[in-house]
Length: 354
Image: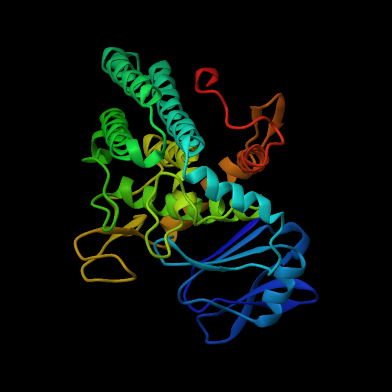
């Protein structure tokens, strides 16, 4: 279970060895909103404007509950994590070595090809329910396949030798992909490509928030597997940049895309009615969002978070011969990556087997 606390003034503390969420009511009195067993909670995300007690931190550490602090727009600020490494330092040493050689390039291509495959899979799924767009969708699939072949064929001794080409091919694929998603949406929900900060439309506002939540999940997933979230292969080693998070997240972005697309294609997002809208226009620089953009309001955040939690944690898929939640699949992938780095499972996968 994941607790997502965003309402201004909400306070998390401990009562009877359980997480207790309190909030000030309309009459000014502080009331308990909900109480949760620490054994059932896996993540707690607290947005700016909320608070917690040190007892809540201690209870979270005792039960290995991830505490993540986020901006109102969903981007992670930081986290509370126990001081133990959780695995052998050999993994991090090998991760650094791999980043400097051909092994890092092979892993980078693996993740990018998996991302393109997931994008193509979502588009193929659209054909089943939108036969009137079959020719358009087939064209996009052919072009994505060609971009995948170009990524597969890139060769070099290091990621750095072909990094610009990889980014260019990935960027082109992304533009084709989001152009396709917009094309098949109802007219009121269509958008003009990706926009991050600020989001220029409702779809991107939802997608940015979903990615922010996914970033925090991927960071913890890597740490649990003993990997360093800062030592990446493709993304640059800029100051305080979670380079490996941005590398490893690529195959899983499609999960966030699919949830957001389902909400919009199912017309569950209200962007017209001011009284029931799920997004708000930003008139000034607020909560890190520049003027002229859009952000999710409280109703929009609840709609998205509930959908994400259901999709990631309660909707199993067939994976490696087992029925697993998507969160479990991602953790297994991280452990497999770590084990392959230290030679337990034979090294990086062969690209032709993808």
